Structures are given as structure tokens and as C-alpha cells.
Length: 87
Image (cartoon, rainbow, N blue to C red; front, side):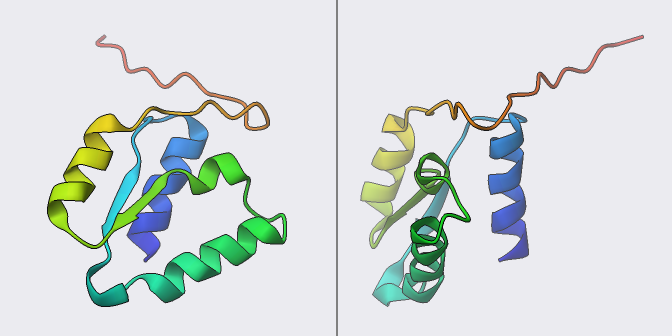
């Protein structure tokens, strides 16, 4: 779970603008997603950040959702411009 949350943090910081796809077979991630939803309800996570988690129970729909994902810019979190330069 630490790695999943790290990738979400990178998106929040503007390092990338990709979602995290969870293949939720037989409800494996239900508890985790409920925890995230509770954090949103309690104000610890912005609703726009919750949209970074894409979760479905079959691979075909997950791939389709990942392909159709459109990033949502969060007005609260300042976007950083991450750039590397060759010197």
C-alpha cells in the first residue's frame, strides 16, 4: 500500500498526472477504498484526489478507464513544475 500511496502523492505534487488503477477482484481492495472514502468524508483528502484511484473488478474495464482518464487540476494543491535538464 505504501507504493500506491507514494504514486498518488507524486500526482498530488504534479510529478505526473496519471491515475492509479486497482484491479479489485473479489473486492480485495474494498476495505482500502472504504478507508480512502472515509478520509475524504472527514476532510483529510480532497475529493479531486480521490478521483486518482480507478477501481473495477475486471482488467478490460480497468484498462479502458485508464485510457479514458482525464486529469483534474486541484485548485488547492499548488502544482510544481518538475523538470530535468541535461548539463
